[in-house]
Image 1 (cartoon, rainbow, N blue to C red):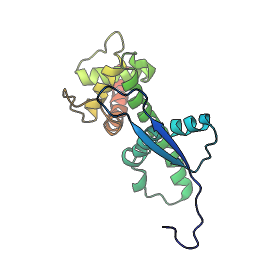
Image 2: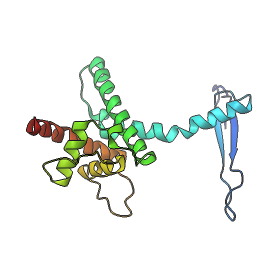
Image 3: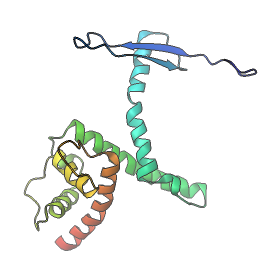
Image 4: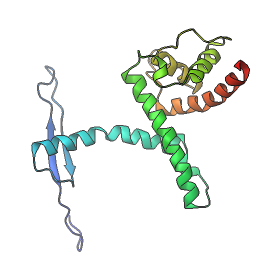
Length: 185
């Protein structure tokens, strides 16, 4: 029902249907409504690609909101809030990147993400040893160690550590790395 004095909003509909679903299972089908014009097939594909990225964007914003606790900041000026938010956005991007990278490329060396001092501090602390291994662990192993620092139990059915757990782990790792640097230099 349209409310009086409210202008109509023009929308385009994009219907996405799964082609050749597994036998015995109904194919996926969903309708995307958008206010961005869809005039050609390539436009429809582009809108679907945008929508497919939505979950990652929501995860990123949840890290800013929950992990960085941006809403609880009591800053006295917009400038201070913008400065704090700029730092929080970098932290959130880094955590989101690690979460995604750890799931998509678990077998690469952890040095694709962690600095030498980070992975060495992480492995010595988590494994309760004085010397780091000669070679850096895989990204999967490093993410699991970091997850444990953040409270992830790592049981068989627990899956990968999530972004909040990794955020807590990275917070702890920052202090652990400082201590590691002090004791090894």
